[in-house]
Length: 219
Image (cartoon, rainbow, N blue to C red; front, side):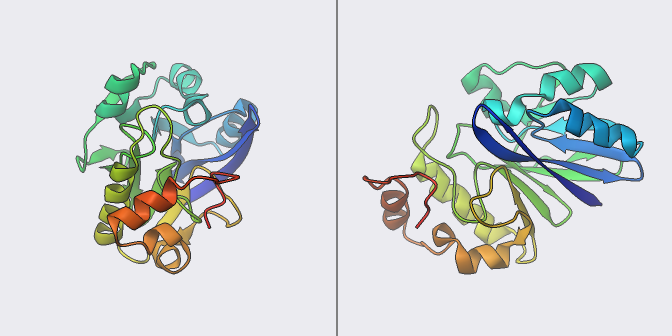
């Protein structure tokens, strides 16, 4: 399986979306902003799009989902919790459930419900690759001060990932703040402070501490 990273931006937001592909079939994760870049890669490499996986419903992660779903008539996956809480709608939308595998054109996709940044955020585990949206970054974790977010759920989600994923799992987040995507869980355990905080109170108070000049200055 190949992972293609696209660096895109819109509305002053820079983020990463991904295409996993194998044997000329592919799946987008959180396609956004630059349609020509993403679609051009499909056409130039003769890749048939088979599905779209959405980690959560924020605009910088779903911006092109409906357009690609309509053009290629492919399913779009998102957690039931996210769909219900934010009244999200999209062409060919399908609900995913925690740990209920999706088998699609040779891909085995395991959705992992990881609320915290949003009510129904999901990470997708495919082989030894975790696409983490805004739940986990290489450098930190997502903000917990927007509608539907909950810092205690974020703590639980991080603890679950730490305990359930192999150390050689590659992490592919929705944004980067100094480190390139595709580092291993082993790297995060050594370098991401939120993966080192075992105590709930320490974790939650540090993520929500006052006086942060930038919510993404993780230290």
